[in-house]
Length: 130
Image (tube, rainbow, N blue to C red; front, side):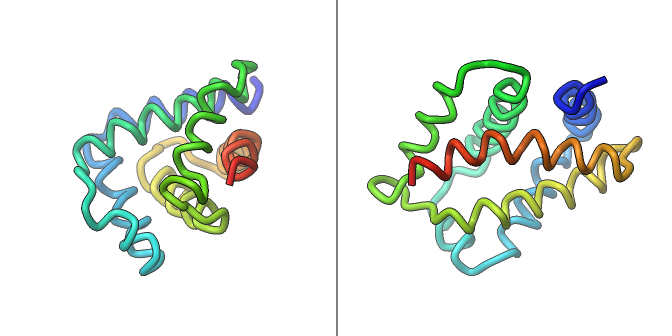
């Protein structure tokens, strides 16, 4: 099984846990004052839906989907829009991996590496738009 398939299965196990997205935002917001500032006036219920879709877009890109949606996300997060600095994505990945490790009952080092591989490919596209 390839990395993208392993990640898709892992994400399914995580999404089965209702607190997965709450826990992610707890870790992510705790990671930096800059992150907290970016989310100060955010509708978090809507943001959780966007997060779910964003992760799916990263996985689908790793499975061969064109990078159109990721380039669009990069444009909305660029210095000309939301101004999400590239280093904040590293905090995002670490918070996500921490949350996955907590919620995926089958998590192991190989799944962690698969996630990092899959995320890196798509996040590079998003960071490239900064």
